[in-house]
Length: 105
Image (spheres, rainbow, N blue to C red):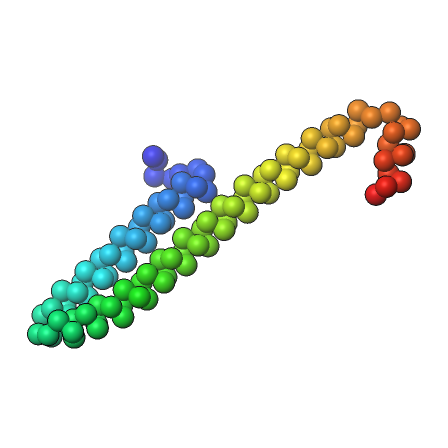
């Protein structure tokens, strides 16, 4: 992979990778700080649990948005190809067939 990826899918993978790593780093730092600050497991679990819920929600939302964007991009590409095919086929029709077809539109 190059430093400047060309496709949107490559960018999604790279951004996703860094977001997951950043999320794990933040959770790890909070876990270490919580262990050093509190002595009971319940206090540590409360501190880390609340953060992991937020980080998990943000990371999940990112991937949800990216999956939707990828699906939309693929659908738009397929629509453009189908439209191009329809226009090319219509261009090959005799004028009488075009007039009959336009009555139904």
